[in-house]
Amino acid sequence: MSALPFCDLDSLAAAIPDGAMLAVPADTYGVAMAATRALVRRAPKRLQLVCVPTSGIQADVLIGAGGVAQIDTSAVSLGEHGTAPRFAAAVRDGSLRVLDATCPAIHAALQASQKGLPFMPVRGILGSDLLAQRRDWRVIDNPFAPGDHIVAVRAIKPDVAFFHALCADRRGNVLVARSRDLLTMAQASRETFVTVEELVDGDLLADRERSPGVIPAVYVTRIAVVRRGAWPLGLAGRYDADAAALERYARAAKTTDGFRAWLDGWLSREPTAA
Amino acid sequence: MSASPSELLIATIARLLAGCRNVVIGNASPIPGSGALLARELSGGEMRVTILGSREYSDLTNGGVELFDRAAQGRVDAFFLGGGQIDGEANINLVGAGEYPRTEVRWPGSYGSAQLYFLVPRVILFREEHTPRVLVPKVDFVSAPGTSPAGVYRPGGPWKLLTGLALFGFDRPRKRFALESVHPGHTVEEVVDGTGFEFDRPALVPTTPEPEPRMLQLIRGKIRGEIAETYPKFAAGLAG
Image (cartoon, rainbow over all chains, first blue to last red; front, side, top):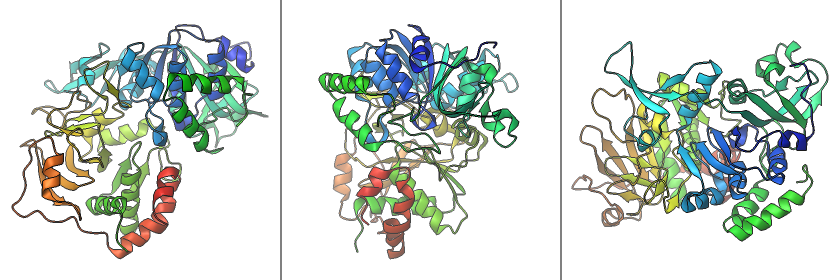
């Protein structure tokens, strides 16, 4: 990368094309909610979400806003705040194609891509109805123990890994600390668009204790700085999820009109407002 | 001080987990999480508890994927799974009720069940609601099968089924549940009426033991505080 990746939130969102396959993390690992708001503002179409390995309000909002054609996920849920209402509604009316998965299969498919391999074997799954409906999962014979059937999941190579992290340095290295699924997502995807809480001085890779939790700049395409960029979700080590805001969403999104009203309010607010 | 229904379930889970070294708690599991933390407390430090979504009770340093890697290696002794539907052969459905894919009722999804159900030796099925719509003759969608044919690599599987009414054991070769105890204040008839599948039962069905005073004291104090980090809404609802 010759050009530095820094940009503003709207430019980052604008660089996600319609139809893109987006890898997004589970709720507690750094969800780019402020950037998702910028993305919804530009009304994306036909996105394909790959949830690593689940999603919550982010997927529900993108689906409710009509931006998602397909979702590959192990679950979509608002956790303690209940089921994801726009996801469930889109399943019922047939407007969303769901590739039902199981957590380790999504991780394995990304790990295959990370390693440049065509597939990865995963234990379990045999005899489940998940297997019956996935054309990208096949049963193969363990070449080292004939008769031992094992599921092979095809590599998933997302167009963009899209998430929020603790900080970046001015060289474009990004600190994710223990949330190492984000590193796999970045390495497995063609590009990585990340928002961070702050920019820090110095070189994150020069810090021997922190560097194991750093995504090197070589994988990172775009970075936008946004404080509280995961709100109303939390960011490990920085802030907790805003339970009251999530509860308000869960209640509002039960109906189409309620969701629309919530969305109008959310889109009109400043990105960092709580 | 008599136990609430949640407290009885937490104490029952803690008793079931006694002797386990490594217990993992998945998503949306406040009662199993509380039960595991109570079992850990009672184990005197012998038991490790990992709670997904928790910062305090997670020692995973290689991302969420490490949980599944550990299970695949046999490093997890016990895990909890639920289900919108559970049938008499312990098949579980976490996807939806009705005809797939456009199910009338859509649940979150299968999470890690399709792998963990095969690999964790002691899987406890936990669902508070004990009604024929949950405990069905046959699930509409198999997120993970209860049993597998010979030759399938499967060191793990269903061990117990705990509901708001009763505790069952599961016999894997016979593919059948057996009633082990009915919770205080409930009857075998209620359990039969609430169960949509056939199961075995002894001539005399024991009553699930009440939590001991020390257990109740811990649940209402230390454990309530510990689970609040991951499940604040649930902890607020437990008696102080």
